[in-house]
Image (cartoon, rainbow, N blue to C red; front, side, top):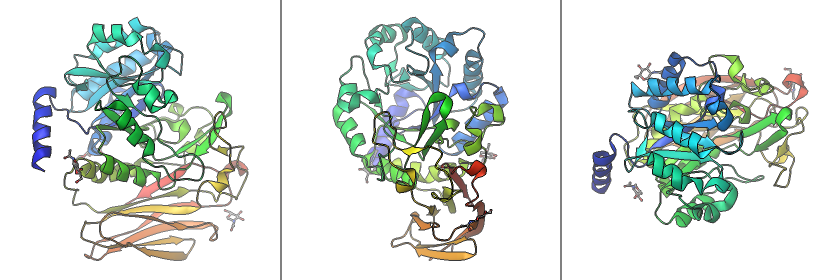
Length: 429
Ligand SMILES: *[C@@H]1O[C@H](CO)[C@@H](O)[C@H](O)[C@H]1NC(C)=O
Ligand SMILES: *[C@@H]1O[C@H](CO)[C@@H](O)[C@H](O)[C@H]1NC(C)=O
Ligand SMILES: *[C@@H]1O[C@H](CO)[C@@H](O)[C@H](O)[C@H]1NC(C)=O
C-alpha cells in the first residue's frame, strides 16, 4: 500500500491529475455526428461516475480533414465538455477506416488540442494512439518531433512482437480482446505484450461482447462474450497493466458498447438497429468502480448490486442470420450455437466478507446458485431447456445484504424478423 501511494504521488507530481493505471474507453467519434455539447457533457459525467478516467477519441482521416464535416465540431465539443471536468481525452488515429493518415494532418490535429487542460499526458507528453497503421510507423519520428507526443498505437495485425519492434513505439494498445471459437479469453497475449514491450507501457483491452451483422460492410460474425466482462477484469487485477482501454464506449454495430444508448437513433449505423435498440449495456458501468478499485489496489465501494445479462433469443430458436462464430476472413468459421451459451450470466457485488446466493427466475422456474467464496460472485444459469419467459434476479448474502428481485427483458423464441439477436441485453439493480 505504501509503495502504491509513493508511486502515485511521484506520477501525480509530474503528470498532473493523471496517473498510471488509468482506465479509458474507446469512443467512435463517427457515431456522434449529431451530438450537442450537452450530450458530450452528459456522457463524460456518466463515464466519470463509473470511474473511467478518459476517452480515446477514434477519428478517421477523411472525416477529420473535411472542413465541411462534423468531426472537427465534435472534437471541439468533446474537449470543451471535458475541460470543465477532470476527465481526460486523447486521439486514436484510425488508419483502417478511411485509409492512412497524412502525417501533417496528424500533427495539426494533435497540436490543435494538446494544450487543452483535458488532454491526457503521459510523462508530460500528449498520448497519441492509433487503430492500425503499422506501415506508417516511420512517420511518427517526424510527428513526435512536431508534437512531443507519447506514441502508443494499436498494431495488433503485426502480433505483439512485430508491433513492439516497429519504430517510434513508446507503448502499445492491443486490440486482441475476444476469444476464438468456443473458448474463454485468456490473458496469454496480454502477458506476451508486456514481455515484448520490455518495460514500455501496455494498454490492455477489455471488452464485454462482440456481434456484428452489417451486410453492406460484409461483416457478419460474433466472438464469444458470455463471462468475458468479468473474466477480463479479473485478468486486469492480476496482470496490473499500465493502463486499460475499454473496447468500446459506443461502437453500436459491433455490440461492444458499454455507454448508454445514444440520445438519437440516427447515431446507430443502418442495419444495426435490430440488434442495438432493444439491447442496453450501460448496466455494466455500475461494475466498474468495483473492478477498477481492485485494479488500483484501492478499497471497493461499500455499495452492493447485481448485474446480469443474456441474449434475448435461445441460440437455436431462429435463423442464425448467416452469422458465424469467428471472423471468416482469417479464422475457421463455426456455428454460433456451438460457441456461446444459452444462459443468464450474473455478477453479484456483495461485501468481501459475505457469501452471495443468487436466484434467477426464468419463465416461472427458479434456479439458485451459492458462491463458494465470499465477495464478488460471477456465475450463470442455463435457459436453453427452459424456453421462454420473463427474467428476474435476486441476491441474498450471508451478511444480510438483500438485492432485488430485479426484472429483466423476456427471453423469447419468437425472434424479431425470424433471426436470432446475438447481442446481449444487460440489466441490474
Ligand atoms: C497491487 O496488488 C497486487 C497484488 O497484491 C501487486 O502484485 C501489485 O504490485 C499491486 N500494484 C501496485 C500498483 O501497487
Ligand atoms: C454522477 O454522480 C453524481 C453523484 O453521485 C450524481 O449526482 C449525478 O447525477 C451522476 N450523473 C449521471 C449523469 O449519472
Ligand atoms: C416462445 O414464445 C413465443 C411467443 O412469444 C412462441 O411463438 C414460441 O413458440 C415460444 N417458444 C417456446 C420454446 O416456448
